[in-house]
Image 1 (cartoon, helix red, strand yellow):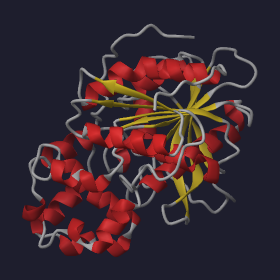
Image 2 (cartoon, helix red, strand yellow; image 1 turned 180 degrees about the horizontal axis):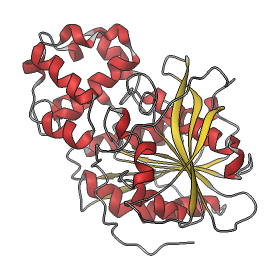
Image 3 (spheres, helix red, strand yellow; image 1 turned 135 degrees about the horizontal axis):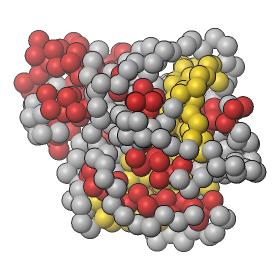
Image 4 (tube, helix red, strand yellow; image 1 turned 30 degrees about the horizontal axis):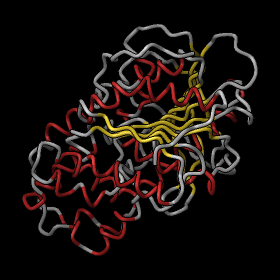
Length: 382
């Protein structure tokens, strides 16, 4: 089913910080990536109290850290109640930045209608597609959120699809065609999932990846955000890298003001984090810039995209006037993937910026994915 193109009335880059934390579980009962650790009935409401013809479950499932260790990640599986029989398409969906606190996790906000991208996810369930939404590592489970650590996020996205297929109540099967979708932080996560799919989760029948506003080179973002209104995102990313790689010892680089800022960011969601963190300079928060050290540079470059060709078609898009993730990040990723022989459909959003990019492109991107589910050939434009 194709949904008529329209602008969705949702500010997809904002998140509310009033969601209720959810319980977590340990991973001792799960044997491998994607195995279910625990599940419980939940609910999917795009807006507070808004009914949907869906069933939802909050899950915890096994996944893998950036360094290859087993971990447990939480998420949500949403299935339309439309009477459909046979293999139902499944989209594993990676949300954009929501914050660092557990209360920011998508699974915490779905039951109350406060997960903002739920409005975009509903456009997928209205097509009859099941959706698995990861909370990412450390967001909704014990530990700190590994924000902007690409490999960890890619694992979490792929394992969410595995977990959804393994959840008996969802009614999915190993034959379900799978799509990957995400924007901004979710663009990094979905792009990593696309690159990792053939080596990490080759049994998933991935038909295509939709990814946009991708921060493909983290080292290129520090000059953009240092001292700008987006500097809170820069400090959040530093906290996320430190969470994944404790040897980076972020705290040892911070002055008292920097330690207070990082503590605040770790305990709040994106709307407050970006407000409080805005117009902060690295030099004002540190005794020494960690991003200039070989240790930090090495770990940041480990999240670089473009080194491996996705083995399935990709719909890649970026707003020309994106003020948070410069257009060159997306266009370079296109060049890198195309040079390796990938099938890439590239879209430049001429009118719009970071937030509006995901809104205006939501329907065309989903239509492209619908064609992949229908078995139609994908024409790239490398």
